[in-house]
Image (cartoon, rainbow, N blue to C red; front, side, top):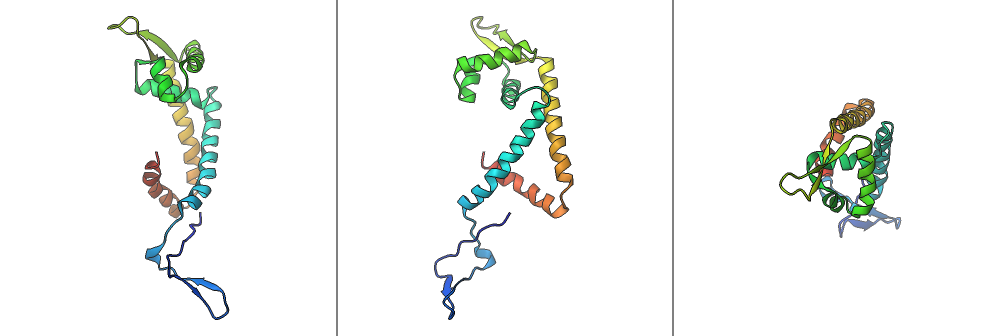
Length: 167
């Protein structure tokens, strides 16, 4: 992916031919965030789309996987709390939860301390499905990474931490 360099003030000079010439020293390279974003966005979207396809091969949507993952990491989460986490209304989320419950992937569990409260928990089938999703996505990505030369693979490895800072 090419990085566009932006000259600092004073680095632009006019040659005798009338053409503008930019002088940049290696330690003065500035990447334009807007240009990087425009080049990075479609790559990330395409990667995400391909990983979603792998999930859908298992008969489950990415949204459903996200909900299962959130419930796995927050057992007892209520429907309202899950809706707030996903930034959708509780009634809209209710349909997703109903389908996941009907599929045997999660269950509604009454809170022993407050019988009015109903939390959500993964079933053993839900746990197995999440493991299969993770394995399938990881396998898909690893197969593509194996096709890259060592230098490119190392560059991607170095980019993981900085990309994580975007989240």
